[in-house]
Every structure is written in structure tokens, then in C-alpha cells.
Length: 473
Image 1: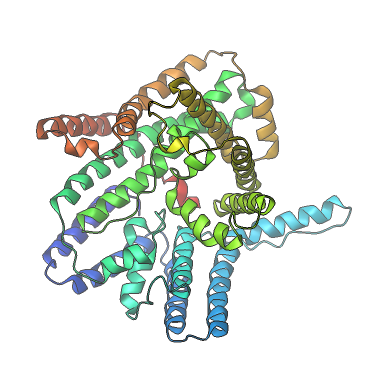
Image 2 (image 1 turned 90 degrees about the vertical axis):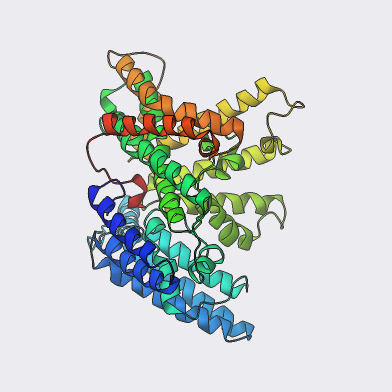
């Protein structure tokens, strides 16, 4: 079920009406949400529910077993069992075809004959998100950061919470489970924030991402027909598309959660204003980058075992982060690229200027140049991410330039038109240091802003219920 569909609007209206009706009994609200989760997720393919239930059951009972023993050897075995089970489910459904085809290709390159064994496996939607969510739960129980849930329905609700189930943010049990286990009191500030997040999210998705995505798709899907600046515009279009698309999902998820009294983590903090790669990953897909840091980079040794190990840990973490996005070499190369620039910046750049770049002690022109350089590197990374083959990446590198074609100005005009509202609001959010500053304006000003947004949504929406990009991950 898509957020940007009429079906979802009806679904949420019914669910929310019943949720408010049951406001005096949070346990009944939880049962209602659990049923809603099943309907929401099963809407694509009800068979996928069995896989979701399997993952939930495994980690629920392993969590209880971890809590019931202090014997370290046994606890390590239980954690290992949980991780193997989770990665086996994820690996089979997401990566089996990729690795079998890659292995067959490798064998063929040395003169032997091998056919890839493929099973036409359908990728269950959102599997990477909920598998990582359940993995973080068992790891945190093992680390004794949280007590295991003794209520199966509460735990199932945590795993399958429909607002963030299929495209995040990847929630931690330490944040979401306690909210499930007690009554929610909906504050007026949550309602104000929810309205902005939902309207802004829909504007970014159905107007900005979906319309600019038409340009991105046209250029990348027919890249051999384009040269020069058109290829650069295609990369810019994709950068805007993927940010607006993915952050829109997170905004809507946070917004509808706030309407029900839940607080989800912020997943995006203006990533295209980053000064360096570390700053970028502190702003982009924060729930994944922080997951990789806490459950992969630090356990590998982090920066505790010398410079060389720090660099290798960074590199491996980013490559695995790229692989998380999909079973394809472009994602691995994207992770490889981000690993390299993280290491280079760590070698060349010292200090934490990015934490407060616009203070009087810094050179503002230099700050601007650093933002511009990081944006250029990010765009190069998105070109790799969006490409579907090595030959396409090489074509973009060789043929991108400053020569204009007959279509260049139409592309610039379209991108500029749809980018304008994003630029205005994001610049204000950045310099006011407040993602929700609009909700704190005078009532009349808020009404004007929301009216303009709604008019844009009504007039300029793409006209189709297009899936969110990160559904495929």
C-alpha cells in the first residue's frame, strides 16, 4: 500500500478514527495497529507476511532466552543464531540470484563453463529494513541495553509498525518499544509538526520527486543518446529525486506516527549542506548510517586499533552499506566510492569545522567551497548509484561536460521549477537550524504556507501513484 495512493488515505482514515476512539485503552490500540500492520504490508502480497512473522518469532524467543541466562557462552551462541537466521533470510531473498550469477560469470572468465542457478526469487518489500530492525533488537538485548519484550504482540508491533515498516527509518527497540508498552498522549505540538511533515512529505514526493524523476529516468534509461551537460543534468535530477523521494517517505512516516502519539527518529538533516563525507552520513539516512556505525563499524574495532585498521573498518562498513541497498555491482561501487572519500577526508581534513561552520572564526568562502566540493562528490556517487552497468558509468565519466544540446534548456527549466520550493524551505531550515521552523510561525503565516503547498500538490502532482525508490531495497 503506497502512502501516495487513495487506498492509503482511506486506510489511514479508518485506522486513525478507530485509534482515537480507543484512546482510553492503549492495549486495544496496539491490537488495532497490529491488524493494520498486517493489512498494510499484506496489501502488496499476503505471502510476504509469513516471512515477516518468521523473523518476528525467531528474535522474540531468542530475546527472551538471552534475558533468561547470564552464561556468556550460551548468550553468544543465541546471538549468533539470531544473526545467522536474520542474514540467511535476507541473503536468500535479496542476494541469492546476484551471487549465483556473479560466481558463474567468474568461472566463465577463466575458461570453464558454468550456468547460474537462479530461482526467480521475488524480493519481499522492506525486508532490509525490518531485518536490520530485529537484528538491532537482539544485539541490544545481548548488550543489556534493553530488556527483552515478554509480550509477543508488543514485539510484533515494534517489528511491523506500518508507518516505517517498508522504508524506515530503521527504529531501535530502545526508542520504539517503550512507546508501544505504555499509553500515548498526543500533544498539540505533535499535531502541528505532523501536519507540516505530512504536507511537506507529499509535496516532495508527488510533485518534486515524481516530476524530476521523469527527467532522471529519461536520461539514465537512454544515456547513449545524451552528451555533455545533459548527462550532468540527469545526475542532478536523480540527486533531487532520490532525496525528495526517500526523505518524503520518512517525513510522512514521522508525521502519521506523531498523529498517533509516537516519535520516530529523524532520518534526514539537510544532507546536501554537508561539508565532508562524515557530515553527509550524519545527515543522510541517519537510521542506517548510525546502525552501521553501532553494529558493524564499532564491533569491527572502529578507530581503536590503529590507523590502518580504522581505514579498513571504514572501507568495509561503507561497502557493506552499499550492498545493503541492493544486489548489484553499482551499489557495491557506490559504497566503495564513499569508503574511499571517507578515508581521504579523514587523512587530509582535521578538526570538526562541520559542527558549526558559520561561526565568525571560519572563512565563509572556504566553507562554501567545502559544501560545493562535497556536493560534487555526492553527485558523482549518485551517478554510480543510478547506473546499471560499468559501461554506463564509464560513458558518463567520458561524456559529461559543458556542451549544451537542444534539450538542455528545457531540462534546466523543469529542474529549476520543481527545485525552487525545495531550495527555499531547505535554506530556511538550514540557517534557522530548525527543521520544523514553519510550525512556529504565526498562525496566519502557517496557513499561507500550507495553502501554497496544497495548491502545488493539487496542480503539479505527477498524476500517478509511483512507488518510493527505497521500496526496492
